[in-house]
Image (cartoon, rainbow, N blue to C red; front, side, top):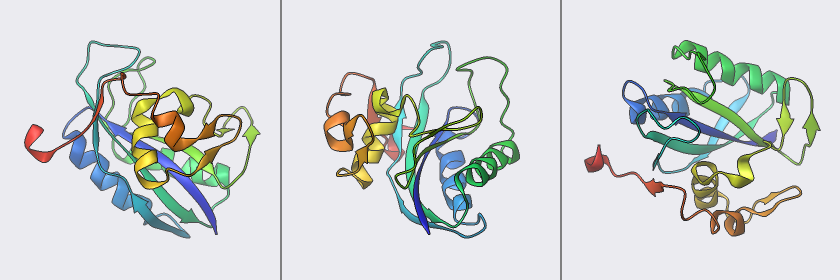
Length: 163
């Protein structure tokens, strides 16, 4: 079984519910088990500001799926939730990104591992640091150290009563 980390995000419909539902659905993928979910985080939009805040999280899973098969499976979950891609950084019902897959490094037309921008994104690093602070991102450093540098990115622990 491989250990993988998946980022989840949503800012349409009921974003917290979309992320929670997708988190549960990860465990239903063939040969896959949800090991540890992070808390939910509220995040200011990046790239295209004229949209609602996001709810983000990260999931640690164990899977027998190979990286490309796992990518296709999570893209299938996005499609089941009604994901559309009208333009870069557009609002979305569900966004799932494969961040890390064991110690695999790859760069293909379809998939780059580790995720090429994860080390710069507080909305990935803060939830990842919650569940795997000692994890090392190849070529970048320890997750906890990288997350400590993201305090000014508009990411905060989400509380149910903040909805």
